[in-house]
Length: 113
Image (cartoon, rainbow, N blue to C red; front, side, top):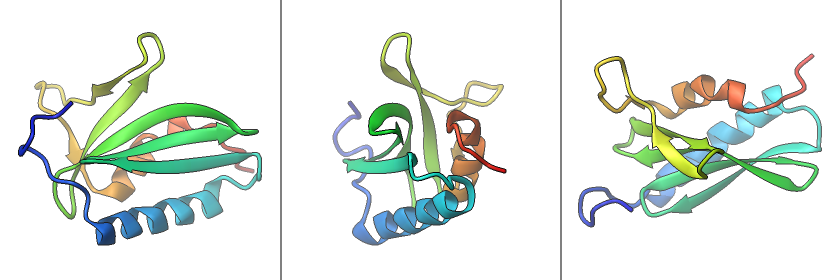
């Protein structure tokens, strides 16, 4: 859990922006009704879960840093935890939401034609 006061909750208008970005992504890439991305928000995190035939697969979460940047954390199945994505110098990565979706695209099993 993050230290209290270090991070802020995701504002409602930013949540709406994230919903729209994911909706656009799903329309473009996830064409089958059996696949979907479900979002959940908790404190400074936006969780991206992947559903296949109503079965949930956690994939990654974004940590809200500012209106334009997010920290990236992927879900590690082996120990059921989220791990920060870091650059080659060990610094935590932070990117815009659109870039985050592109970086984590391989974690979604889509049916692109």
